[in-house]
Amino acid sequence: MPEPGTDGTSGVAGIEPGWKSLLDAAALPAFLTDARRDGEPVVYANSAFLALSRRAEDEVCGRPIASLWPGAVPGEGGSAAEFLAQAGDGSSFWASLTLAPV
Image (cartoon, rainbow, N blue to C red):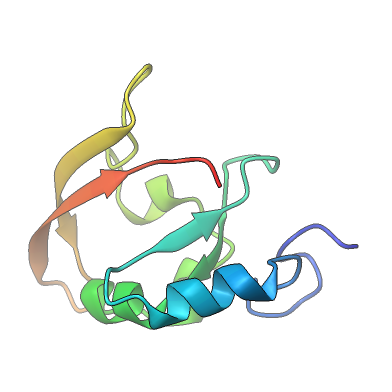
């Protein structure tokens, strides 16, 4: 099986269909990253996340979350962070990011 996001698609390769279905059905903005790859790039973002961030899938997938929102990733030993995020259209919103392994 190829590494997630390395097959030239939108980053969904390698994600079990159950996870994608679960995230697609969620009203809560969510994304998956690949912790095995340098920078932990986003490999999938649900439509709620794309709507909140006002970004297209190709602007999010394949990029580390820290490149979208510097300072968004919790510091060492932390699993959550709150920060002022900039949306794709230039507007801003307060965001809370919680990291959890799946």
